Image 1 (cartoon, rainbow, N blue to C red):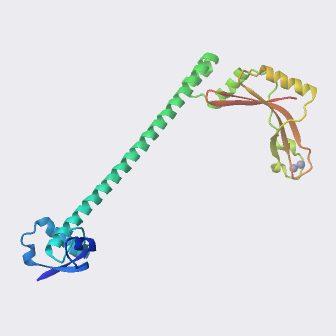
Image 2 (cartoon, rainbow, N blue to C red; image 1 turned 180 degrees about the vertical axis):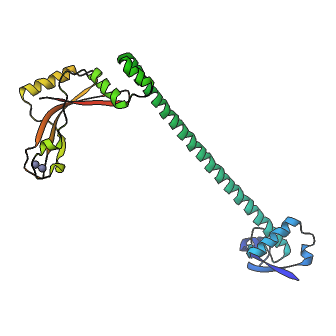
Length: 254
Ligand SMILES: [Zn+2]
Ligand SMILES: [Zn+2]
């Protein structure tokens, strides 16, 4: 009995070995051929047969059992190289993931640090500038950011002029057409101020703290669905960055 193993003989390898048969050849492997073959080679032959593989490689030069053995060696070498390449690629992936995870952790630490510094600065400001009630509520965790910001604006802006009261939609459209929901508010640049409004703007500019921006803004509410007269208010927006927040409040220019 015998089995057949397919070999592919490369022209260059054949000629250099002084052989002239090239291309695909079949080698009959008999019981006698396998007598002295080590166990792992037998396992490889079994695999080649099961997968219907064709052996090839630089030692495969003729249709002999010797070429089969060299073909198996070349196959084993290729597999080892492939496994090593896969292993290297896996290691690289793991390394890249670890690096990304490290960057992510560092970024989170930075954020936590920034949050902690912000909270510390806010608490410090409250302790130095607010009454006992606010300090106690801050310490107990019951003081909301909105109230702190409002308080900070009152104290830091310290602008005596009247605050702008937002225009309500029903003020800009009071007809009975039921179109009050169409009222749109917009903020536009100011092109004209009367004497008194201009004086108020100058007053706000003088009262505003260092580092604050004072932006003249026309606030307009209009209903495009009816003929109600649009409402227009002249205001000045005061804004200033403070401990990571943007403080901003609109004042009426009258
Ligand atoms: Zn209307
Ligand atoms: Zn309307």
